[in-house]
Every structure is written in C-alpha cells, then in structure tokens.
View 1: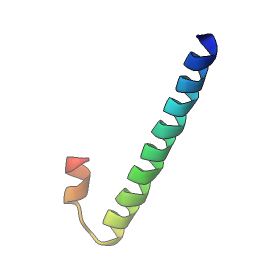
View 2: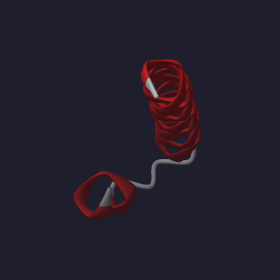
View 3: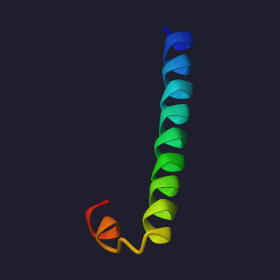
Length: 42
C-alpha cells in the first residue's frame, strides 16, 4: 500500500509540473501577442 501511495505522489508531482510549464508557455505566447485578457482568466 505504501508503494502505491508513493507512486501516486510522484505522478501528482509530475502532472503539477506539466501544468505549470504549460501555463508558462501559454502566458509567454499571450504576452508576445499582447493578449492581456489571458492573464485575467487563468
């Protein structure tokens, strides 16, 4: 059971990092296009 919990924690961390990286990429793309409304909704 402890091994399963450890695997789930690692998967959760990896998913959170992917989401954070994706938001940074989208934010930079929005800034390069002068789309300020992106920041209010994310």
